[in-house]
Image (cartoon, rainbow over all chains, first blue to last red; front, side, top):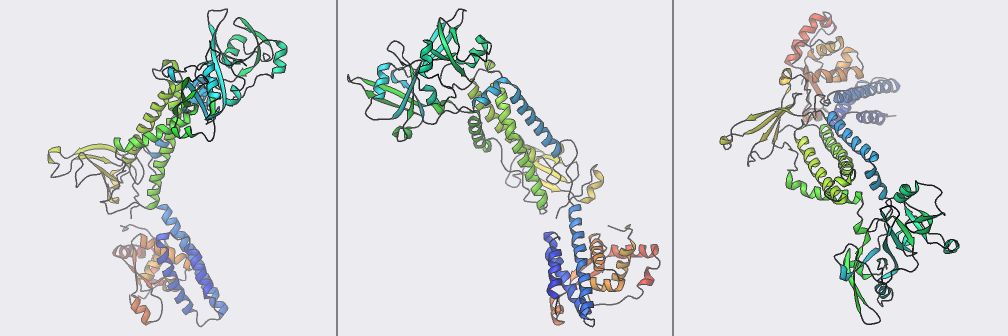
Length: 489
Length: 105
């Protein structure tokens, strides 16, 4: 019985432990040796011969593991000097941590983040009076609203309206009370509802929804206020509930919302919110378009329709947009190549290249939360100090942080040793600008671990367009504090 | 490089055996009586330290003898110097493997 396949299988299994680059030759040598071992056992009994062969093959495992250990021992450790890769990542993580903590602590930022949980439906439209297009919220009269609701070509399947009435109070301040149609909150998907008419009618007073700010300021955050009749301005009202902070995302700051079954009147025009029909062709027009209707008297009414979602960009949406813009602008502000050292015949091993790319990726990953939260912190922490509104301020800050952060990431990567990822130091001017065409001139940096020198040209020329890395061999080790056990193949 | 390398007794013995003309792994095993799990890793370390160097036998020679080609080892200049130093350190080394053999390389 020939058990040759068993010994071959043992060698193949052992070869798995051998580093890939050495595996073929290692297996070739062991198979050749196995042939001789088997040949030498020819005069022995089968059992004795196979035992010897098996013992020989077991040695292959020790040899393979030895090779594996040798290869891992040659892995160059990361630099531990000042500015090392670890320090860099720790520094970025610390900045990111501070940004996140600041966002959690600052009330303005927390409010903005919590606001993002109230999403307006995608298909809501704010309809403005076309003749008042320059006003922030041009009011719509009751005639116009009726014309909209009865137009032959249906663009919308639901309408709601509100009108703001400034109510004087006993103190010098006044309240902005929005008189809202019964279906407004439902249309906006707000988490509050008025009492059913049967309950409210018993009290014979209008019912209101208080803003959280007013509830805290005027009613000391009384938890039992709902269902009570209170005096608001000069009228008694029934408190139907408290509107959560930041839930109201339509134009104007409101103190209270009063249920108004009547809707806009001729004297007090209002703002109309409509829900687009799914088959509405105006969807193709974008976020802003105009329309008109003709009423029974033959009068034309022009309206400007704008999507509500476009007016309420979330912080995440702003950040993603700013990141996209920064990525577009990046190639225009800094070269993207990391200084691949093509002219050098020697190469770093694949594991070092992987480590280098992982380091770059880690920096980018840490940069993202820094840019996101730092821009939020700066934009929303103290909005009263800003010249710009918070939204545009966040956009500009996010864009700047992303752009300059990525510039720094690339520049930092270019100025690191590709072997130990240590920061290159001791910049020295080499050459003279007047001799550019005779010899190179630029800056020379050195790896403190002794792995090599980086030559960065002052002027890009056809023969020296990008930075070059020059590896130093082991004979330079004595000059450096850190031993350069350079694994360069 | 390793003119001052101090070898273990096993490594010195392998070096002595290779110098004596037992120039492939299995013959070193047979001569020293060491198992394969000791001999081959030791030879790789000696080669890494540039005390021995290896080269593959020509395929034509192996084909003529109807066997797979062997990997042969021989001492380098540094290896010879180190072996001389080891012989002084281990005086019995020369007695363990006394006679140099000539094998085709």
